Image (cartoon, rainbow, N blue to C red; front, side):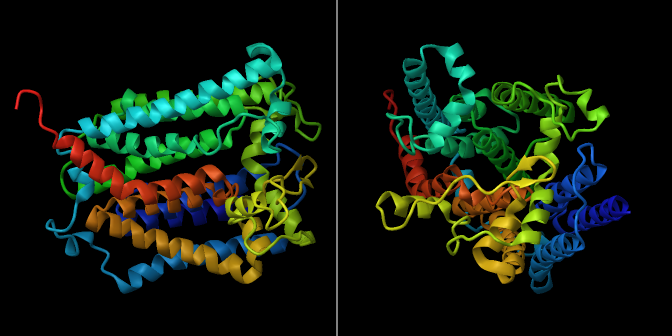
Length: 441
C-alpha cells in the first residue's frame, strides 16, 4: 500500500511542478522523485530490511510537505508567468561572458582543468611512491581511503581540488551556451574523476556530475526564456548524455570494484544475489540507493546521538576550527545502524535533526523550498552569475537530500565560497582578456 501511495503522490507532485515551473527539470520534481524512488526501493526489500515505523512515515511526509509549502509560498506572493516580470534591459552579465563567442571562457575552463589534472597527478605520485606501484595502490583502496580521511597521507596539497569544481561550473555553462556537450566543457569533470579515483571516493564524483548537469540545464532554461537557444537534436542529447552517464557509472564501478571486491550481502534475497557479479546491479548498489531511509528510521527510534549545534551542516567550518585547536575535531564518520546490514548515511533529515532538533527538521526543508524557488526566478529574470551559483548549490542540497546533507563535504562548501568570491573577478578578467588588442591592430 505504501508503494502505491508513494507512486500516486509523486506523480501528482511532478505534474504540479511542471505546471508551476513549465519545465520537468526543477527542484520540486527532483526532491519528490529521489525520495519516492528511495522509499519504493526500500519497501521492495530485495534486502531483508527492517520495517519502517509509523513515526518515520509521519516525519518524511511532514518534511516533504514543508518543502512543498516553501515552493508554494513564493507562488502565493508572485505572478507565475515569468514573462510578465522579465525585461530584456535588465543585467544579463552571464550572456556577456560570450561576447567573444566563448573564447575567454574556454581559456578559463582549460586553466581550471589543468590545475585539477596536475593536482591529481601529484596525488597519484604520492600514492605510488608510498605503496610501490599502481596495482599496489588499487589493492590498498580501503586503507588509502581511511588514511586520507584521518589525514595520514602526507604531502597532499589541501583544498586545491576545489578549482576543478569551479571549472565544472563554467564548463557546463560553456556546453549549454554552445547547446551541445563539448569535450572542453567536460574536461574539468574528467579532472575530478582522475583525482577522486586516487581518493577512492565516490562522493566527489557524484558532486561533480550533479553540478555539471544542474548548471547545464539551468543555463539552457535561462537561454530559452530569451530565445537564444537553438534547437538541439533530441537524439544527439540522449546519445551524448548516455555517454557521459556511462563514464560516470564506470568511474563509480571502478572504485566500488576495489573497495568492495566481494559483493554479496547475507541479508540479500536470492534474486538479488544472482546479480552479485554484475557491475551496475548488485547487492551493494541496491544497498547504497535504498538504505538511507532505513538508517533515518533507526536514528529516529534511538535519538541518542550527541553533536554540537550545526556540526553536520557546517562540518567544514568545525574542521577548520579544530585545526586551530579551538574545538575537538569532529568525527567525519557517522554512527552506523544495523538494518540488517551496517550502513551509516541517513538522509539530510538525520543531520538536520542532530544539528537543530525537530524545529529545524521542518523549518529547513521549508526554507530550502522557498529559497530555491526565489533564486530560480531571480536567475531567469536577471541573468546574474551570483544568482546561478546560489541556485546551483541549493539544487545540489535538494539533489543529495535523500542521501546526506551535502554541505558536510568540503568540496561543496569550499567550491561554493570560491565561486561566490571569484565570480566578479572572473567576469572582469574575462572582459579584460576579450578587450586585449590583437597583434594585427
